[in-house]
Image (cartoon, rainbow, N blue to C red):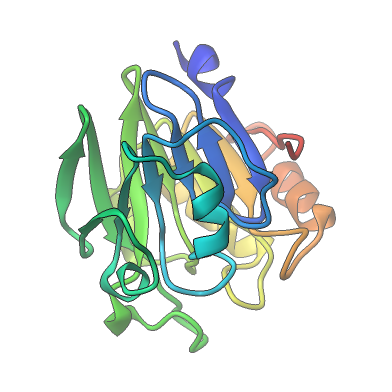
Length: 208
C-alpha cells in the first residue's frame, strides 16, 4: 500500500505536489502548466510561491475545496475553509490535520502568523507536508508514513537540519522539497538523501 500511494504523489516543483486518488489533492501549486481538476487544494501560507491565485485557477473547478490559513484565504476565492494549527477538518472524506510551520532562527515565517503544514491520509497512508518551516519541536509529535520536508535553507531549514527533522519524525519515506525555484538546488536534496542513508528511505522524485 505504501508504494502504491507513493506512486500517486507527483512533485510539481518547489513545494508543490499533486496526489492522485479518489480525490485529486494539490498542495501549494506554483508555476504549474495545469493538471487534472482539483477536488482539494491545501495552501500552507500566503507567500507568493505558495499561495498563487493564478496557479490555483488553473486547476480549480466548481467542486474544488481550498483549505488554508486566514492570510491566504483573503487572496483566494471559491469554497474556502480556514484553519489554524491544531485544527482538524474533514473534506469529502479526507481528514486534514493543520500543524504548525514556522522559523526558529529567522524571521520569514513567524510562529505568531499561524501558518501551516498538513497531515492527511490517502488509502490508509499518512502524508505530512511540512510547509515552510525549520526543525520545530512539534515535529516530534507528528505521526506520518511519508514526510515532505523543505531542505534549501535561507527561508526554511537546511538539508542538515532537515536530516534531524526526518530522524525526529521517523517516516517510512522522506521526500525533499523547497529547492530549484526560489532557493536551493538539487545538491541540497542529494545531501539530505546521502545523510539519511541506512536510516530513512529518501526518495527524490522527478519534477512533472
